[in-house]
Length: 125
Image (cartoon, rainbow, N blue to C red; front, side, top):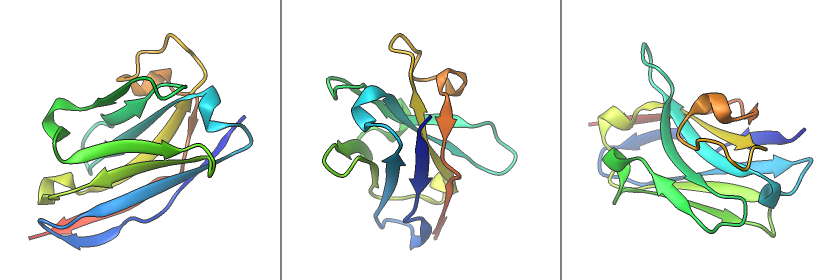
């Protein structure tokens, strides 16, 4: 089992940037497909971005491309979500997640086995 801890959320003005880290412990981050999801009040959890086990492939939700970037530091066993030009509609709890299934549908939250506790990001205009 792997433990995931997000941090770095907070209050940011529209147009600003934020980088959210997710520290992974218990296993190497390279053993997992890693993903970011978000959930706004009253809405379903939605896919934000993912990266494959060996970093060969990255995906970002179409509506977030050009503003959000996923990356990882294998030496620090940490996953990152860089969010630029933030908008009020980006306000949500952001979660990192890990999947042991090499064939997982990376866009589906049900395919992920372990989750962090989430970090709140609030964007004000």
